[in-house]
Image (cartoon, rainbow, N blue to C red):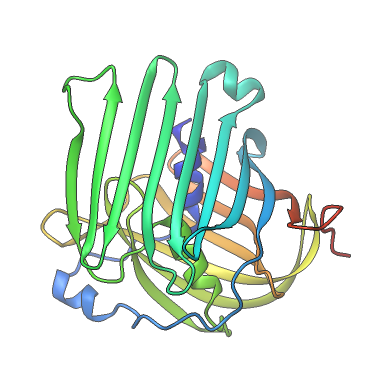
Length: 276
Protein backbone atom coordinates (compact mmCIF):
# COMPACT_ATOMS: atom_id res chain seq x y z
CA UNK A 1 0.00 0.00 0.00
CA UNK A 2 2.96 2.37 0.19
CA UNK A 3 2.36 3.04 -3.48
CA UNK A 4 -0.53 5.22 -2.42
CA UNK A 5 1.47 7.78 -0.43
CA UNK A 6 1.47 11.37 -1.58
CA UNK A 7 5.19 11.21 -2.25
CA UNK A 8 4.99 7.99 -4.29
CA UNK A 9 1.92 9.13 -6.21
CA UNK A 10 3.63 12.34 -7.30
CA UNK A 11 6.73 10.40 -8.29
CA UNK A 12 4.52 8.50 -10.75
CA UNK A 13 4.76 11.51 -13.08
CA UNK A 14 8.39 10.57 -13.63
CA UNK A 15 8.04 6.79 -13.55
CA UNK A 16 8.41 4.31 -16.39
CA UNK A 17 10.71 1.70 -17.88
CA UNK A 18 14.15 2.03 -16.34
CA UNK A 19 17.06 3.17 -18.44
CA UNK A 20 19.62 0.31 -18.73
CA UNK A 21 22.74 0.79 -16.58
CA UNK A 22 25.35 3.19 -17.93
CA UNK A 23 28.22 5.16 -16.52
CA UNK A 24 27.65 8.43 -14.69
CA UNK A 25 29.59 10.36 -17.32
CA UNK A 26 27.35 9.03 -20.09
CA UNK A 27 24.00 9.85 -18.50
CA UNK A 28 25.12 13.28 -17.31
CA UNK A 29 26.06 14.14 -20.90
CA UNK A 30 22.48 13.35 -22.01
CA UNK A 31 20.77 15.78 -19.61
CA UNK A 32 18.66 18.47 -21.26
CA UNK A 33 20.29 21.88 -21.09
CA UNK A 34 18.34 24.07 -18.65
CA UNK A 35 16.15 26.55 -20.55
CA UNK A 36 14.42 29.62 -19.09
CA UNK A 37 10.65 29.17 -18.73
CA UNK A 38 8.99 29.60 -22.14
CA UNK A 39 5.38 29.42 -20.91
CA UNK A 40 3.27 31.66 -18.63
CA UNK A 41 3.58 31.01 -14.90
CA UNK A 42 0.77 28.92 -13.36
CA UNK A 43 -2.19 30.64 -11.79
CA UNK A 44 -2.76 30.17 -8.05
CA UNK A 45 -5.23 27.31 -7.63
CA UNK A 46 -6.85 24.71 -5.42
CA UNK A 47 -7.16 21.21 -6.87
CA UNK A 48 -8.24 17.84 -5.57
CA UNK A 49 -6.80 14.56 -6.78
CA UNK A 50 -7.87 10.98 -6.28
CA UNK A 51 -5.50 8.01 -6.21
CA UNK A 52 -6.42 4.45 -6.98
CA UNK A 53 -4.97 0.96 -7.10
CA UNK A 54 -6.16 -1.68 -9.60
CA UNK A 55 -9.29 0.35 -10.29
CA UNK A 56 -10.25 0.99 -6.64
CA UNK A 57 -10.04 4.41 -4.91
CA UNK A 58 -7.37 4.45 -2.23
CA UNK A 59 -6.35 8.00 -1.33
CA UNK A 60 -7.14 11.65 -1.82
CA UNK A 61 -5.04 14.84 -1.83
CA UNK A 62 -5.84 18.56 -1.65
CA UNK A 63 -3.37 20.73 -3.55
CA UNK A 64 -2.97 24.50 -3.08
CA UNK A 65 -0.63 26.53 -5.28
CA UNK A 66 -0.03 30.14 -4.24
CA UNK A 67 2.46 32.89 -5.02
CA UNK A 68 4.16 33.80 -1.76
CA UNK A 69 6.48 36.65 -0.77
CA UNK A 70 9.82 36.99 -2.51
CA UNK A 71 8.43 35.98 -5.93
CA UNK A 72 8.11 32.35 -4.92
CA UNK A 73 5.60 29.65 -5.75
CA UNK A 74 4.43 27.59 -2.80
CA UNK A 75 2.73 24.23 -3.22
CA UNK A 76 0.90 22.73 -0.22
CA UNK A 77 -0.39 19.16 -0.39
CA UNK A 78 -2.47 17.38 2.23
CA UNK A 79 -3.15 13.71 1.54
CA UNK A 80 -4.53 10.62 3.23
CA UNK A 81 -5.74 7.13 2.54
CA UNK A 82 -9.52 6.59 2.41
CA UNK A 83 -12.14 3.87 2.53
CA UNK A 84 -11.10 0.23 2.70
CA UNK A 85 -7.48 1.14 2.14
CA UNK A 86 -7.45 3.34 5.25
CA UNK A 87 -8.77 0.44 7.29
CA UNK A 88 -5.76 -1.61 6.21
CA UNK A 89 -3.15 1.15 6.14
CA UNK A 90 -3.76 4.48 7.90
CA UNK A 91 -1.60 7.14 6.30
CA UNK A 92 -1.62 10.96 6.49
CA UNK A 93 0.86 13.36 4.91
CA UNK A 94 1.52 17.06 4.45
CA UNK A 95 3.98 18.36 1.87
CA UNK A 96 5.16 21.92 1.25
CA UNK A 97 7.47 22.91 -1.60
CA UNK A 98 8.82 26.39 -2.35
CA UNK A 99 10.19 27.28 -5.80
CA UNK A 100 11.69 30.47 -7.24
CA UNK A 101 8.98 31.74 -9.62
CA UNK A 102 11.41 33.38 -12.04
CA UNK A 103 13.91 30.52 -12.49
CA UNK A 104 11.76 27.54 -11.35
CA UNK A 105 14.69 26.38 -9.23
CA UNK A 106 13.66 24.64 -5.98
CA UNK A 107 14.32 26.40 -2.68
CA UNK A 108 13.10 24.07 0.06
CA UNK A 109 10.75 21.18 0.82
CA UNK A 110 9.16 20.02 4.07
CA UNK A 111 7.20 16.79 4.27
CA UNK A 112 5.55 15.11 7.27
CA UNK A 113 4.24 11.54 7.01
CA UNK A 114 2.30 9.70 9.71
CA UNK A 115 1.90 5.95 9.35
CA UNK A 116 0.19 4.37 12.35
CA UNK A 117 2.51 5.26 15.27
CA UNK A 118 5.49 6.35 13.16
CA UNK A 119 6.18 9.93 12.09
CA UNK A 120 8.72 10.82 9.39
CA UNK A 121 9.80 14.42 8.80
CA UNK A 122 11.80 15.18 5.64
CA UNK A 123 13.46 18.54 4.98
CA UNK A 124 15.23 19.41 1.73
CA UNK A 125 17.38 22.53 1.32
CA UNK A 126 18.47 23.29 -2.26
CA UNK A 127 21.34 25.52 -3.31
CA UNK A 128 23.27 26.28 -6.51
CA UNK A 129 25.25 23.03 -6.39
CA UNK A 130 22.77 20.49 -5.06
CA UNK A 131 20.61 19.53 -2.07
CA UNK A 132 20.91 18.54 1.58
CA UNK A 133 18.21 16.24 2.95
CA UNK A 134 17.43 15.68 6.63
CA UNK A 135 15.10 12.87 7.66
CA UNK A 136 13.92 12.37 11.24
CA UNK A 137 11.82 9.37 12.31
CA UNK A 138 9.84 9.19 15.55
CA UNK A 139 10.24 6.76 17.17
CA UNK A 140 13.60 6.04 15.59
CA UNK A 141 16.87 4.29 16.31
CA UNK A 142 18.85 7.53 16.19
CA UNK A 143 18.17 10.67 18.20
CA UNK A 144 19.04 13.09 15.40
CA UNK A 145 18.17 13.35 11.71
CA UNK A 146 19.78 11.28 8.98
CA UNK A 147 21.57 13.73 6.70
CA UNK A 148 22.37 13.15 3.03
CA UNK A 149 24.02 15.39 0.44
CA UNK A 150 23.67 15.18 -3.33
CA UNK A 151 25.53 17.56 -5.63
CA UNK A 152 24.38 18.39 -9.16
CA UNK A 153 23.56 21.77 -10.76
CA UNK A 154 19.99 22.40 -11.96
CA UNK A 155 18.52 19.78 -9.65
CA UNK A 156 14.73 19.62 -9.23
CA UNK A 157 12.29 18.62 -6.53
CA UNK A 158 8.89 17.26 -7.61
CA UNK A 159 7.10 20.62 -7.82
CA UNK A 160 9.89 22.42 -9.68
CA UNK A 161 10.22 19.47 -12.08
CA UNK A 162 6.51 19.63 -12.93
CA UNK A 163 6.63 23.43 -13.26
CA UNK A 164 9.72 23.26 -15.46
CA UNK A 165 8.28 20.60 -17.77
CA UNK A 166 5.00 22.53 -18.17
CA UNK A 167 7.00 25.67 -19.02
CA UNK A 168 8.58 24.04 -22.09
CA UNK A 169 7.06 24.02 -25.63
CA UNK A 170 6.05 20.31 -25.32
CA UNK A 171 5.83 19.70 -29.05
CA UNK A 172 5.32 16.11 -30.22
CA UNK A 173 8.55 14.13 -29.93
CA UNK A 174 10.16 16.63 -27.55
CA UNK A 175 12.34 14.91 -24.92
CA UNK A 176 13.37 16.34 -21.54
CA UNK A 177 15.95 14.54 -19.36
CA UNK A 178 16.32 16.02 -15.87
CA UNK A 179 17.39 14.89 -12.39
CA UNK A 180 14.79 14.92 -9.62
CA UNK A 181 15.41 14.62 -5.87
CA UNK A 182 12.02 14.01 -4.22
CA UNK A 183 13.13 13.00 -0.71
CA UNK A 184 16.24 10.90 -0.04
CA UNK A 185 17.52 9.74 -3.45
CA UNK A 186 18.12 11.19 -6.90
CA UNK A 187 16.41 9.94 -10.08
CA UNK A 188 17.07 10.48 -13.76
CA UNK A 189 13.69 11.31 -15.31
CA UNK A 190 12.98 11.23 -19.04
CA UNK A 191 9.75 12.77 -20.36
CA UNK A 192 8.84 12.28 -24.03
CA UNK A 193 5.85 14.07 -25.58
CA UNK A 194 3.73 11.48 -27.43
CA UNK A 195 1.12 13.83 -28.84
CA UNK A 196 -2.29 15.41 -28.24
CA UNK A 197 -5.66 13.80 -27.48
CA UNK A 198 -8.96 14.36 -25.70
CA UNK A 199 -9.11 13.08 -22.13
CA UNK A 200 -12.00 12.82 -19.70
CA UNK A 201 -11.38 12.88 -15.94
CA UNK A 202 -13.83 13.59 -13.08
CA UNK A 203 -13.00 17.32 -13.36
CA UNK A 204 -14.13 17.41 -17.02
CA UNK A 205 -13.04 16.71 -20.60
CA UNK A 206 -9.84 18.37 -21.78
CA UNK A 207 -7.56 18.71 -24.76
CA UNK A 208 -4.50 17.02 -23.33
CA UNK A 209 -0.78 16.55 -23.91
CA UNK A 210 0.26 12.92 -23.50
CA UNK A 211 3.72 12.21 -22.10
CA UNK A 212 5.71 8.98 -21.80
CA UNK A 213 7.69 8.78 -18.56
CA UNK A 214 10.90 6.98 -17.63
CA UNK A 215 12.78 6.79 -14.35
CA UNK A 216 16.12 5.44 -13.13
CA UNK A 217 17.62 5.69 -9.66
CA UNK A 218 21.06 7.27 -9.40
CA UNK A 219 23.13 5.07 -7.10
CA UNK A 220 25.75 6.15 -4.56
CA UNK A 221 28.52 5.57 -7.10
CA UNK A 222 26.74 7.66 -9.75
CA UNK A 223 25.66 4.63 -11.77
CA UNK A 224 22.08 4.29 -13.01
CA UNK A 225 20.09 1.50 -11.37
CA UNK A 226 16.77 -0.08 -12.40
CA UNK A 227 13.89 0.93 -10.16
CA UNK A 228 12.58 -2.23 -8.53
CA UNK A 229 9.11 -0.92 -7.74
CA UNK A 230 8.22 1.15 -10.81
CA UNK A 231 7.87 -0.28 -14.32
CA UNK A 232 6.25 2.32 -16.59
CA UNK A 233 3.93 5.33 -16.60
CA UNK A 234 2.03 7.76 -18.82
CA UNK A 235 0.96 11.28 -17.84
CA UNK A 236 -1.45 13.85 -19.28
CA UNK A 237 -1.52 17.63 -18.77
CA UNK A 238 -4.16 20.02 -20.09
CA UNK A 239 -3.27 21.55 -23.47
CA UNK A 240 -4.18 25.12 -22.52
CA UNK A 241 -2.67 28.13 -20.76
CA UNK A 242 -2.80 26.37 -17.37
CA UNK A 243 -1.29 22.98 -18.25
CA UNK A 244 -2.80 21.32 -15.20
CA UNK A 245 -1.78 17.75 -14.37
CA UNK A 246 -4.84 15.66 -15.31
CA UNK A 247 -3.98 12.01 -14.94
CA UNK A 248 -1.12 9.57 -14.39
CA UNK A 249 -1.25 5.84 -15.03
CA UNK A 250 1.61 3.72 -13.72
CA UNK A 251 2.51 0.05 -13.65
CA UNK A 252 4.32 -0.77 -10.42
CA UNK A 253 5.20 -3.84 -8.41
CA UNK A 254 1.71 -4.16 -6.86
CA UNK A 255 -0.19 -3.62 -10.13
CA UNK A 256 -1.78 -0.63 -11.84
CA UNK A 257 -2.13 2.68 -9.99
CA UNK A 258 -3.49 6.05 -11.08
CA UNK A 259 -3.77 9.69 -10.08
CA UNK A 260 -6.71 11.71 -11.44
CA UNK A 261 -7.90 15.31 -11.20
CA UNK A 262 -11.22 15.49 -9.35
CA UNK A 263 -11.72 19.26 -9.39
CA UNK A 264 -9.79 22.49 -9.84
CA UNK A 265 -10.60 26.08 -8.91
CA UNK A 266 -8.38 29.03 -9.76
CA UNK A 267 -7.89 32.10 -7.59
CA UNK A 268 -10.72 34.65 -7.92
CA UNK A 269 -12.88 32.12 -9.80
CA UNK A 270 -16.29 31.73 -8.22
CA UNK A 271 -16.88 28.17 -9.42
CA UNK A 272 -14.59 25.25 -10.30
CA UNK A 273 -13.36 25.22 -13.90
CA UNK A 274 -15.15 22.49 -15.84
CA UNK A 275 -14.17 22.21 -19.51
CA UNK A 276 -16.63 20.91 -22.06
